[in-house]
Image (cartoon, rainbow over all chains, first blue to last red; front, side, top):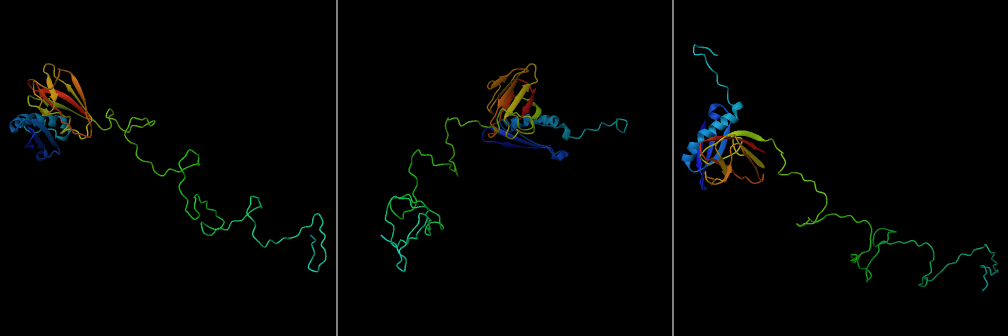
Length: 71
Length: 193
């Protein structure tokens, strides 16, 4: 996931995320109160929410057998 | 007066006889009805078409009817002015759309509310033209607060554990709604329409 922060003049910061680098067509935008430090603190939670709410867009992880092959 | 023919012979008329009469001069003015009259009018309209001239002077064009209460028959109204703003009742009105109605597919999702005030919505961003925002706390201990971007852990509307709030919005105006936890992070479910 890639992200960008845009500090706004009204004391908020816009967070823009894009999962295109993971091969997933999903973009998200939100705003937090504060500057980049607040945005940085909130970013993991925003990412987690998107991965959960749009789980159908993300490929199911393949669990491999420690002895080789797939389970 | 005796009638005679061209040879001078006296004419005697029976009761059913008739004599053609030629009137060389004009008829005098009067009120007597003289029978059917054919009108040959070539100036106004076509032949045999009579145009009524409502005027005081001869030759003037037809003027508008004077104001009054007389019934002049069916009238076709071509255009009507827009109704001015007011409080008059104008009859039954069909309401095409209402903010209270759900007229688009709702968006649902879960959201993590942290100690950083952040915008709250169900999907990847706030739903365009949303008219309702429903937020329900899935937390059993902590409260969170909801309000504008200036909401803090001490201000805003407090939402109790397990409680919910429904916010009605104008779909034409994008109003961001923020939420902040009074303590640690907590989960809420969100519904937007």
